[in-house]
Amino acid sequence: MTACRLLLLGPPGAGKGTQAERLVKKHRIPQISTGDMLREAVAAQTEIGLRAQSVMDRGDLVSDEIVIGVARERLSREDTRVGFILDGFPRTVDQARALDEMLESLGSKLDRCVVLVADEPAVIARLLNRAEIESRSDDNEATIRRRLRVYREQTEPLVEYYRARDVLAEVDGMGTIDEVEKRIGEALGA
Image (tube, rainbow, N blue to C red; front, side):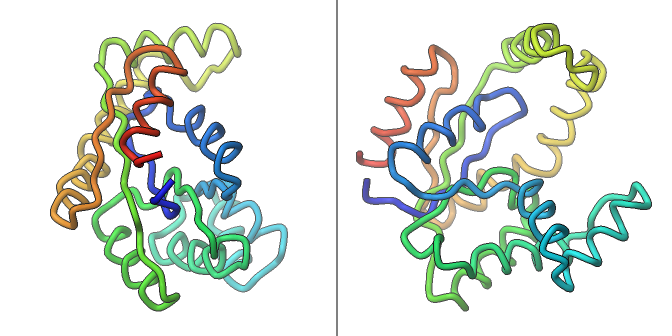
């Protein structure tokens, strides 16, 4: 694989988590998700982790400043030197700009942003099926539609942001897990 520092984008239910797991196993690079970063920073009782914990304890959303700070801490670790897979960060263009600055200060850059393109009705059906199988109350149709709207409004603009930086690879996220994995491999030149 020529690209080692990756960002996976796509709407909820597009298969990012599943494909990230496969990339981790195949390329032996860590998957870094926003939730994992926050939990690790809180557990480590870092300064930024303590700030995040107080916000989360109040039930509030963690600010960009905190998310970016936690990402900086995580991406500064030795295990990310050979590469990483970002999942869930950045979520906005402002966060993407901060990521670019952060990586530059670390002497690195994002190699590829892989966008899993998925049909919205199929994604809704996929998430409703997952909710039924896993008994997930957070995946009801109203919540799913709200999450998709937030994705379109806040995260989808990253597609153009990364296209302008010539690191975007759009991959059809519909099909079997193996088919999508093969398409991602082709997009990465693996």
